[in-house]
Image 1 (tube, rainbow, N blue to C red):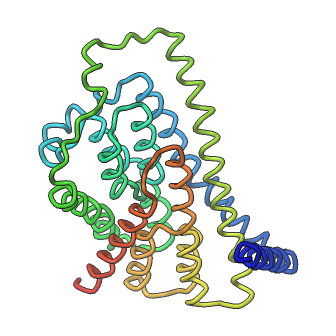
Image 2 (cartoon, one colour; image 1 turned 60 degrees about the horizontal axis):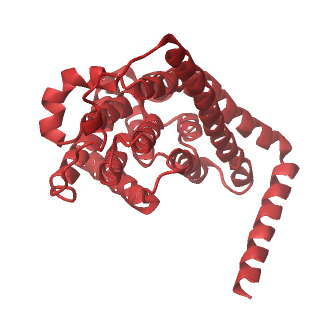
Length: 311
């Protein structure tokens, strides 16, 4: 009986939503176009090259060449494996959802343990500098606040990662399961490289296409919200639903630069439901705790709110 009532309620909600979207087809089209446009102009060019190259580097076992210059500082500081250093660097450099993608891929390649993967996922899956400087700064921030913004955006997760390493994960020894197999240098034939490029192009196009679908879908749902709400409440829901569209909504409110800066950063710290769904897709084949991941995101968002109250 409970399942019947549950299924009945869900069916009514879905049918009602479908009716709202159909009856407001013009708004639905506009919001869907907003999601598609943001994905095409910002996500696709910013992420696709990194998705292809990062997968190729892991397949060819070349990531250690990248992490070696940074390992002298990051390894004793975070006490993580070489694969963990690569994940940390690429997660912060390339941005969301590359952090989740690389954590998942390194775990599946047996380069990260489950504990280290979950630890890195808790703070390495953030928005990248390219997205921040081109989209966020281009739409919301004046130049005077850009340096302050980028410090807050990356300093808080890094410090949070350090805090976790010496508290919750203080007793863990993060050693790559594949370290003992790396004694011999891998041989890369031209055929292996070409196959790797082909495989990673197909995989990355599929993944980024799905990410675009989430962005379009979550923005499209705002057409139903706009029937009942407008102004600040609608903007809040838009930020909670899909962050890129939410940033555009913040810009449309014509707020003061300082207030727009604060609201945008708090929204960026939470990421938005669309981003979380994309992350869950990226780690779907891994036994990571989604509840723990969401808890860490809520904590990071709370720390960001407290930071803005103190500065």
